[in-house]
Amino acid sequence: MWPAIAVGAVALALVATVMAVVALAVATTRSSSSGSAPTATAPTYGATEVSSARQKLCDTYALASRAVAVDTNGNDPALARIALTNAAAMLDSTAADPAVANKHRDAARALATAYRTLTVKSSSDAFGEPEYRAALNDVGVEDAAMKKICGVS
Image (cartoon, rainbow, N blue to C red; front, side, top):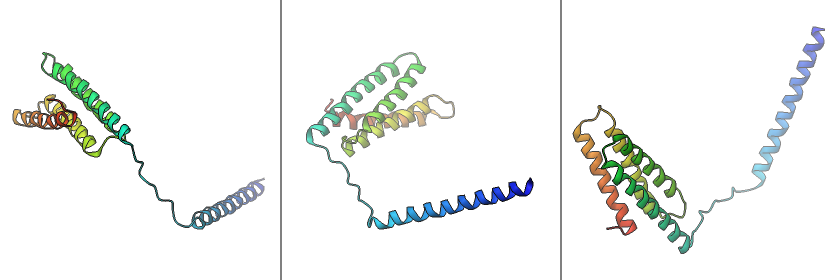
């Protein structure tokens, strides 16, 4: 019985090898016969789409920054950290829209990063007052950039 099983296993391995070689040959011929690879073109967006994406980003910024302003000036550090974290996530999500202009996307992501950094530096005894103040100042700088983009005074 063992020789029959061994012969069957060898036959199965041989069939699998032949099939793999054939599949490789087919894949190689198909990829090389197509000539050059198609070039991907970046999508373009009209003025209306870009304007709509910018408005959505600014609406998100207004909502997020309001929550941050309210909750970071309260008496509950946990709410402040939650507001900073949520605001960062909202900005990142809205900035991911490909119709958002690169400079606006970069500003939103920079503010989101500043919010996260402030969250970390405010929630650990590992960071001293100077590091916390530097993170807080960075939020101010990045927030001013978003205000400028969104026309907020």
